[in-house]
Image (cartoon, rainbow, N blue to C red; front, top):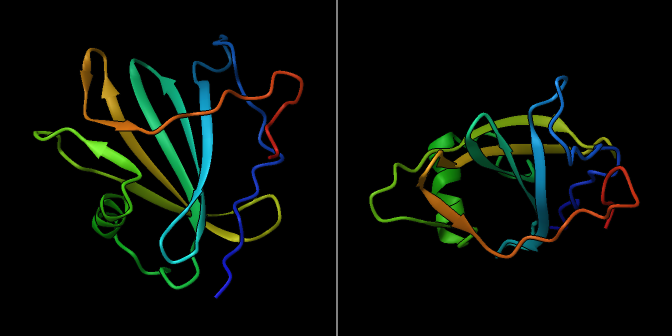
Length: 134
């Protein structure tokens, strides 16, 4: 089964905190799960929280629970959780820029001086484009 790659081409990256938006986008990367499902991970911060959002196709996992997503991310080594960390994920369905049904899985990986998990290397956003369409 071929799963669609998440399309974030219409997303406008916010590199500077403003009065209108206190969220700041830090970086992104893409990968492939063991079942061949492409994913995109985005690192961002807001209100003293560091977060990641992982986008992946809903195909075949339409009824996954938040706990199942935590287990999936563990199995696939998307995040490296600290030993005493409370593992939590919050998933919402959405349509990507190409109209494909995707999961948007949000995880808080840090709060102020405390870190719960780490992610692999992140790529900087392309400064010449509003969103990075790679």
